[in-house]
Image (tube, rainbow, N blue to C red; front, top):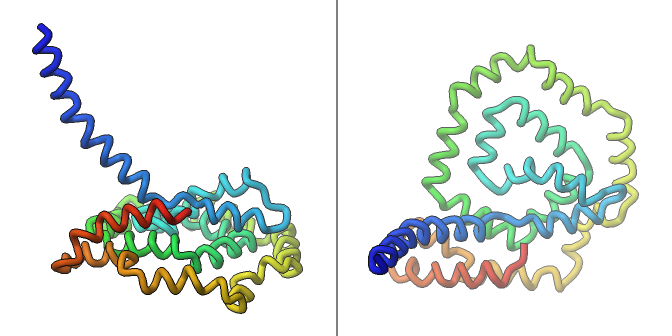
Length: 221
């Protein structure tokens, strides 16, 4: 009886361990949006609650499959455009696009060919095409478009232009310390590890994997 229980436990671990490892690897590779939350907080009249509300939509800019699903669904697409038409969102996007951790995310995404294939399939989903054909008769889409005309949106933009942090993506180029981590990223071979692995470059593919893990731990999202 004891041997049977041990055997059953080993068999259970054999099935659970790979699934758990795969989930942990996926969670580790996902963008955490920590820097995005920090940049959002720099804006006037911005709260963490508001950022948490738009965060699922911002994920489209870090995940090709999510972007494909968003573009295939007119309601989600117009909602994303509504979110982007906000100085707080623009501030986050411009600053994050200059962060090495964002470059890591894009490098992994652009060299994950199975994921890109899945994204292309989701983009061409026939159900989404039907939704786009019916979009002119969808009141939710018209409502999303009309919200671009709300007065408070223009007030928010006017307020943003008076906030010196809004110009940080431009003024940061004048700070010499700003260049150090970015130049370090460009000259670090491990920055290109996903590309080496995708192309299976001999002598570079194998060690790149461990280096990528180390790099992911040292860089904060």
